[in-house]
Length: 281
Image (cartoon, rainbow, N blue to C red; front, side, top):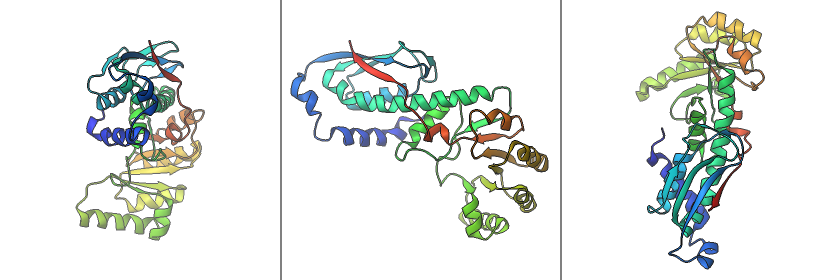
């Protein structure tokens, strides 16, 4: 569960972006004391996400707004369902309407897509992960949605894990140099961070194994056959992750090779929003 204080800066910035000196459309034609009700209507089948966020948005706009939830985050929904009803000053409801919908439509789409991947992996030991291929400014929402959909989060940012990709290795002068420098850096800074390193082929897997001192090996753009060969060589000495071009059609094949994780950028970077609406009644 994400803590409210983690998303409050986003809520404040988003409302400032949208409202600034006032919602003139509502202020111009709706009395200040007018009270209204609205329902969050599901218009597409999927997994709902963002209900808790919606409650925090309305609460921030006007603490007098009351939200009655009928469905919880992560539940399967179908067209025609009502996720929640909301009651309060009409102007306040309208001020929050678009932000709530924008967030919930995207979060629900991500949760729905993640759920589809998770179901395909059922019965294997493999966990589906997101990546840093997220929308700037709303990463916390998108990664939250992945978790609601049953997936797990990879590192949140550049600060909470060491991840040596191809460019890091090349700029550092090679695998041995990169790992050696990372060990020294972590020791000097007294940091306890997990270390993952990318391998582009079997020779790099062998070189990584010879150097050691890491936690996870990412097998980047390996075929399923190459993945199986690499896993035999790694022999469970390190965590393993497959990445690169893996789709919903191929993910099961990679999972059946026995990797611990599969990271999928498409969970967050290729999303068509789920259809929802907030209707007065």
